[in-house]
Amino acid sequence: LNGYLREEMYMLPPEGVEIEPGMVCKLKKALYGLKQASRQWNERFDQFLKSIGFTQSNVDKCVYQKYVNNSTIFLV
Image (cartoon, rainbow, N blue to C red):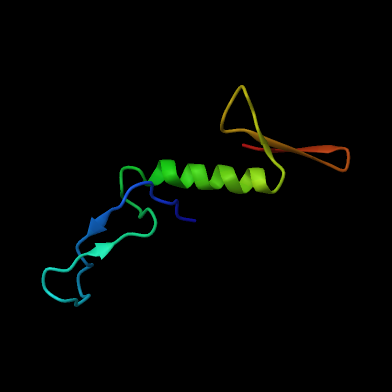
């Protein structure tokens, strides 16, 4: 589950990957190790949980809840 980047980012190819000299790789999604990767992952995870019916707590943004068959599911 990789988050989507808001800006264009480029990188040198990984060691062992051969491309034309002077060329770089354009990232399509956030990679582990980027400073913005954790934030992008959290935004994508939040969108996914909301798409399957969870709601985010107003008190603690790390807590989600969903009501199913007269029961409450909490995701912390």
